[in-house]
Length: 518
Image 1 (cartoon, rainbow, N blue to C red):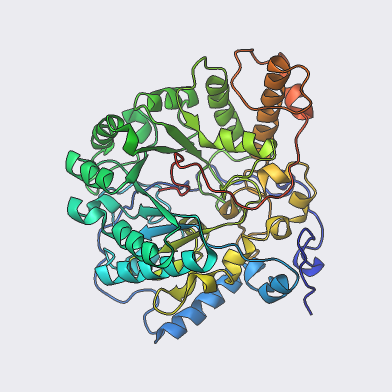
Image 2 (image 1 turned 135 degrees about the vertical axis):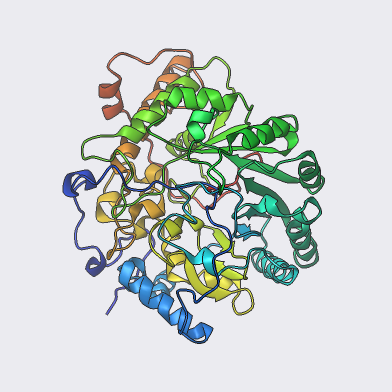
């Protein structure tokens, strides 16, 4: 019999017997050649005709059963160990969906060699129609409006995604956003709808940018750095580099700052961090999103070894340049979110902190899925068995996969719950916790990197507060020209860490780029 889950109380012992030691002390050194992940690119055109992986399973109900079996095998936590009904009875209330990712296109004009949608564990894209139909768009708009009205949402955020969403003609780009705005205006007139498109940038033209700007759709671009050498893996289907076209699109976008959401860039240990950062600044991004590669305990990231923190080293080189720059030339979301969490402020990120997940993905065929990043774990990891025709977004809230990501501390491994950094780290990005046959209740595969990164930033914030406001009792975030003190490592290890209380999700600032990797 499962024990009930109460807010702030660890889940029952059978699911997590004891807090484990730090993962870098218990797991063998993984291979350096494990695949990395995130990008907006998708390396395949339409698949050849023939039976898909679900051939012979019969009706959709059989497919849903197969999905449940797969979830139970790969991820016992949460699929066989979380009793959602008991959690609800104990007081864990669901949080409404606030961000809707519309997969308007399931194919891409690039063939990036590390894309999580096409080159990692999940190959579900092969069964998807190339484009979302007007009927599916209309049904999605209806369901989103229904959800906004039911929960009196002040705002919903749309992200047009793919594949490559700009494969649509300019006249068609705004259709999904227009449909949602019309439906929401009728059902929930007080709800504001914001929209962003996440693209690889190669298809940005004046015509497309004009159409997007007219519809109030801002543009985020994924790039691996600001130089050709940083982007050798971002190629088209003939193996030709895509950087020149992306750079052209970014230069055009930079001339329209009102439409510019920012740039997403995945950390690449093979590239110099300062060169990467400085080269991205050449495109005048209002915001830079630095993303850890999508990896986990079964497919660890390159360079991952016990006792080493190569990703923290890379990120801290950028942080020091950004933090001590006399002029703030861009926002770096990762650093700003850590600072906010250290100060006890709410954020909407799913990669840090304990804010409940609030994103749903709508595939081109109308399937409702969880966050795309889960596709890096195993085949079908993002699947829910739900569709726009058969389920509401309220029903999605009780799906074990999403419910687990709304439980805060109660969803974390014992080691994480006992860690003094838990309110800031939040156990790390959910896909990074995965281990085949166990699921998502382990510390992040980047645990050591996150600890070092957070402690270093906490020390920098504390020094800035002491420099600017010596009498203040609590640190404040802000730039400082004061150089880092000698013996930084020792300072970082003992830096005071503010432990904020859990807070309800707040709206993300309107000028943030989308919270999903492309």
